[in-house]
Image (cartoon, rainbow, N blue to C red; front, side):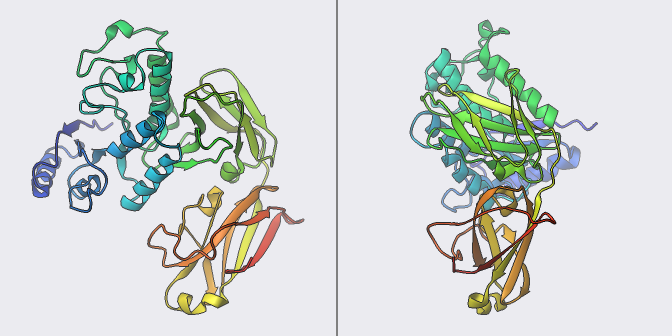
Length: 398
């Protein structure tokens, strides 16, 4: 197969953009498989001055250091933010970059933490420090990106710009075993920039971040306790990612031999207890097949007929994957005429969903055109004798 060489370039914000454009043309003309990696020690926009991370993807570099991931995840595990800050980061990635762009998450490099290392920041080479580092590094491995490992990180380096701590190399080193297992997982299920990743709500949102990643060769459910808190039980609404997997689901632990089964059309999973900073990862397997319900949402848009005639469209957004997982203006409805639109999808029977409608142009992820604020629409999916269900709503009226 093709051999891909990688070249990291430090402090790219020094020279002008034209320098990097010319460099890219020259290097790629010699070897198009070279991957150019930029260290952009800034946020995505840099106050729109033209030298933020996003500005170096335009005909210059293939990958850039994702410093906002480092800032976000460290603010969470060090107690300065809640886990849902990750969703704010994900929203920025969607808004500011096109699909398929490769990012590079990390928890440390030669510049950060300043005159320290991640493990020192987390408390040192001890049980708590190691658990915090694993908590911070998990998303780096499973998110659709190209994870970046600083030398010695997997062994627990504590000396700033020091030597690799080979004395920590052992089959019993939990950091080493974790990093090795995560690399193996990425290879096995083939996580790439095109894999799907979404948040799954849970009963302990102030402490736990839960998610599903769908890759070419498998699906993984993850729970990360990102706080110094013992949690007895976490419940998750797995209906948000069941999609067409309405049969019996098996959640097989990646770190032990335990397994949890959920019956067909049942949408809740209970996990626990979780120790402080504990990570649980499960491979999702469907053990039996049950067809989902074909659901058609019919929307009366007569109150907005002028706006639709002027070029706007109706959208639906809800708390399940099939309705965009609360990303606005993602799921566009089919227009019948200026007074009516519909949206068809498949959802497992007995799933309770929440949703709303929007009227907008759809170019941006925004809630400007939402029908009303406050409480969402709610319905329990119940198929008829043909395993179908129709829902009739009027925009702006409950």
